[in-house]
Every structure is written in C-alpha cells, then in structure tokens.
Image (cartoon, rainbow, N blue to C red; front, side):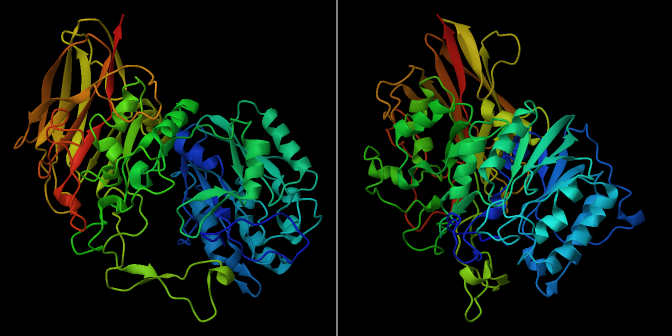
Length: 615
C-alpha cells in the first residue's frame, strides 16, 4: 500500500529489507496517465468490491470492441493488505475482476495493469490465493500485466534476484498463455504486452521494482521494434511528494527511468500538457521563466492557472481575519522575483494578478503574438465546511509504521478547509468537436478555452471576422489573417445562466468588456510584465438580459496585428484596474482580508483571438 506523502527509497543496499517507504509507488503508470488524457483512454479508478452479476461463469459479457474510439484500461494498485500473512481477503479482488468480465463490453475494458505490491510479505501463502483469484481472467483469456513491488520481493535486489514466490505465481510461464503477452526478459521480471483498442495496437511495458542494466536495454529494444505503437509504461516507483503534498519530484529510480528510457522515447508520452499553477501566490515564477517554458515546448507548456483553487478560503468569519481568496496570503520572499509589485500577491476578483491586470503579465505574453492560455481549476485539498477529517492514530501508530493515513471520520462539525468541490465554483470550458480526452487536450492546445466562477454564464461563443467576411471567422485561440485597413467585427454570443448555481442563486452577467492589445513581437526584455498598448476598448452593458443574445461589436480597422479577448462580471465589485482607469475603467479589485465571499464577486474570461495583418 502506498503512502501519499513521502521521501524516496534510496539505492539498493545490503541493509535490512525496506519497510513501507515514502514513495508514491502507485503513481507508477507513467505515460498511461498522459495516454488516458490524450488518446481516448478512460483511466479506471481503484478496484473496489462490487456485487457479482448473474452471468454464466461471470465471463459471458467480456467482449470489448477493439475499434471503438473509447476504451478503458483498468489500473489496480497495491493489494498488499488483502494478502498479509494469515490475513487473507480475496473477495475484493475477485469482485473487481468479475466486474471487468461483466462490464467488458459496456465499458469497453480492454486490459488490466497491476502496479505491484500484490502482497505484503511476498510469501507463497500470500501469492497462492491471489493467483487463484486471477484465474478468473486466465479462463477467459483477458489480457493483464503484473509487476513486482518492493513488498513482493527483497527490495534490496534488482531483477537478477532469481526465483521468488512472485515469479512462481505471476512469471512469464503464466502470462504467455494470454493473447496479449509479447515477451519477457530472461529473468522473467519484466514483460511487455500488446492489446488492440481504438482501432490500433498499444504496448504495455511492465517493469520490475529495480530493473537491471540489461533490462533497460531490453525495454529500449522492445520500443524500437514497435516504432509506431504508443507505449504505456508501468512500474512501482517513479515520484515522491514532500510532507505537505505540495511538491513532487522524481525518486532516484524514477529519475533513472526518465534518463535511460523515457526521455528519448516519445512513444511513451504521446501527449502531455503543462500549465503553471497559481503564478503569483509566491511570486517565484518570473516573466523570463514563463517565457522560457513556453518557448522550450510551445505545444506542451500551453499557459497558466488564471484563477487558483481555494476560492472558499476567505469566507467572512471562516478562515481568519487575514485570509485571502486563493490562499494568497504571502509576501515577497527571497525566492520571489523582485520585479513584481507587492500588490501582485493577492487575487483580484478571485483571479491571479497576472491574469486580472489588463496590460499586465498575461497581456505582455499575448502581445508577442503567441497563444498562452489560462484555466481555472478547483485544486481540491480540503473543502470549506466539510465535516470529514482524517481519523486519529491509535497509540504507537504513525504514517511510517502503518503506511497509510487513518480512515476518515465524519465529525458532524465543519473542519478547516478553503476549497470547493470540482466544478462547484471554478470551471474551465474547452471547445471540442467530439467527445474524448484527446479532443479536450486538442481543444486546450488550440486555445479554445474560457473560464468562469460561480456558473456566471452557461456559454459564450466568440467569433472575429472582417466586417463583410464570409464564414464564421476565427474563434478563441484562433487567428484571422486580414489585409491592412480592413474593418474587423467581433460577434459574441452569450448564453446566460439558466439555473441556480451551487449557491442557490441564478447568476446574472452585468457587463462584458472587449480588451484589445497590439501585437509587437518578441520583447527585448524577457522580464517585461507590461503591455502598454493593451486596454479595454469597449464595454457592453448587458444587465437584465437573459437567454441567448449576440453582441456585434465593431473594433475598427486593422492597421497592425492585434488580439482581442473578453472579460465579464456580475458587476458587484469593480473599480479602476491596477494600471489605471485609462487602461481598465472597471476591473476586478482585491477584497478586504477575511471578507472575501466568492459568490458576491464572480467573473469570466476568454482566451484571445489574434488578428494578423498581412503586410
């Protein structure tokens, strides 16, 4: 069983067998997580005990569709406490495996990957019952992979350790009977598997707790022999987290995996997106670093968190007199970039200063003519007013000797927390043409994104076109090529909120601002955070309007390249923006410490549309 917060295991040594260490070993599906987001995979949740269905031998309905664009790869992490010495409980695993058989068709379950720590002590008496449970899949020839975790073998050894109870139970002699088995290293501890889904072949690499140099070479060769096959890498240890869960880094073994296998094999990561989180909470992300990240991988590093989580962290009377929405309660430190003003370390209408400031950091990056997106996520850690908490330790117990936190308990009394549930307050909307994770990631990469708080509106469609242009024009994240002097029109179709939000009120949009910025190309000073030629150029008063309506807003002639973006609010709290009324006459403002009811100050922002003047 894996700890949620811990330090990495060290190198192999001759010391005592490692006990439950501080490694995020269940985070071992490197590449699978990215494949799940970008290639149509539906990553299954942790296996749970479910009632047995009434099917013949519980296998009749497992008939996945290999050509359907949607499919499920089941991930089963540590089952060790179910197979712990004399304490053997096969029922949850059996029920989970029967669920795969019963729902193979309707959920299109194509494969199962176990991430190791199958047992607690690696004993034959522990592996026996688990091995028998997996015969449910063997009889139906359902493809699956397993790998050894540190509890399954002597954790001081690599895969040259020789025969073990793990290998006796789940070695190649068993797996090669399955149609998905591709091959194994001579030692038997590393295997690869091939399955079909979404009309193509996929490869799963299941690597040992500590692969030897020869096994790394074998894995590279397997990938080389399947040059067009997406690779899902599974192993037991990759990253670890600090004691607060705020920072994660490679464990030494994870770093070795990256250096020797992952970094030079793009097949393992078919798709991945990166966004900078809460940039000005600490001020440690300088403008030149943001630009360097964007320039290093423009198709991967696509933007930043426009609004942080912890939006419920400053309810009046809840989190203390100094609380700020987003938990932006910090001051500049020695680690902060010194060019940020002190006022940048709080949120404005719940949004990060970098996003909320018209003519600020976000605009300075857009003014280079390159897309840089924003998001708004819930970032849930502890939900405000939730009554559940972690249970208390029994005498003599702690994280190090149990490997887990106590079970949560309902106190019936609100517990400390500053978050909302996902989607309860913060939302990121992505424009897609088809349903699927790949389509969502493609939409994010294309910049078809707008965000809102408090379910302020149901929808917004933005189109920028020539005054008499043919077609619908360019939308969010897109580009419109025009000749110098052509007249440009923005059409914004707003669908107002049609139902009460999670606060019990039907939100109402009060105004919609058009923000225009000149595109000047790359900046001379990469620490520049101002865009002096960006400002609010039009404000539409839409208070009282309901249903769906379209605003047709002329934005003048295109004498030079520029971009347009929209911002709206409920109109309850605004004032001249950070850079003055001439730039932003009624922008978001900080709230008083300890008095930040988020439901009384909601905003929406869209990504930009670029207008490129052909010279």
